[in-house]
Image (cartoon, helix red, strand yellow):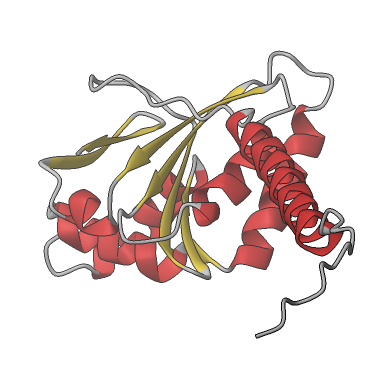
Length: 187
């Protein structure tokens, strides 16, 4: 049996798999850095939660669903006074809430228009400062509340808070009364 000839082929470093590995790591680090920047950008949106105690807000925005928002401000008093005679039980908070839902529900476009008008009216007038309470149901995605909060973030004339709650909480409230020029809702 003859011996095989000795092969002196030089074996080089296989660069193909090394280049593949470097490319995969590069993509991993690029995507990771982009995601970190996105989450940090979202973290800069400050959403305060009010204390669980009696408080006062000039505007209440209750998010009902994707395109329905209940806007309660000082005009709600006139609405309640004007239409409460038609209610079967004018003292019932549920009947008053149903009346407000019938008269004061806005679409997303109308809500943004009303916020823009309010921001324009308060520009430059520190005395026209508003506290806005935004209520969002737990089952709705987070971005519905943040899209409203973004409108108030950079304006010094607005303070805002965001809480969880549904319109059913308002409907089942212990008290919904008009006292002077204030609507008092006891959630």
